[in-house]
Length: 184
Image (cartoon, rainbow, N blue to C red; front, side):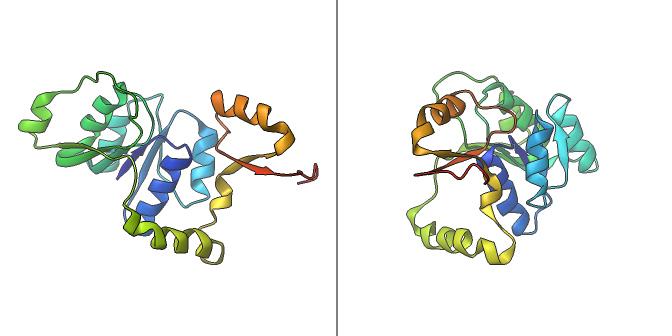
């Protein structure tokens, strides 16, 4: 599996795939995000500044990934994901929430029988499983607090919104508390 985008959602989806036994390749522009992904056992990083599709094929003995999950908004990356999967492979769009246009090779769908599909959220029927995964994670080594990069007091909400509006390579999830101890 190839997960393009190692923000919080990309890391979470890649880590869940790894928990099922999948070999997971990850792609991102920022080494800082690959370092965070490594805390979840994601140890096959691909540098998104290079040719991700070729790197994915090299990592799969020339075949291509079975599945590519696009966890970053960027319509140009749909083409990369389609090129990175094997014939008969699947591409899941998870972060494309803005209307727009995206170029990709339609022959990849027809002749190579690649599937392009999208999802925005999970089914409510998974909520109990997700709760168990999140709250048992501390005991099982799946500690999602590793995705918290910044902690803010409610007094600093404006600064938090500014950071969320202009994410950096090392910004992931933010946590709010009524008061934040400067030593934490």
